[in-house]
Length: 145
Image (cartoon, rainbow, N blue to C red; front, side, top):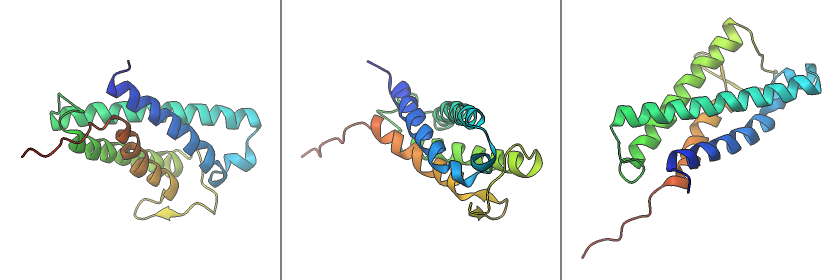
């Protein structure tokens, strides 16, 4: 049986792969890249998402000292993991879109102030970690009488 962390990361990889493919039309690569370049980008980005997810979870467990996660501290770890992934993503999008110009958004990508982060990568890291965390959430304890 897989550990909770392994289950969480497996779900995150699957969700991020789906998300990366779905948001492709909002990046210029979709119209300008070859099929090989697009496939490489999807794999590369999904792999990067897996590393972000793993690092964010580790950071969250360390910061919250939830050593018995997920049986204890599930909520704190979920919130902290989400914020860590979101924070890194906002920084990475700013760095790679605006400074390095490693990738570019199409005009259809809504951008959020103040750094111009794309809406879909922001939502990706706001929504997917809590969704994946539901797969490792401990069962609710019955009320004691």
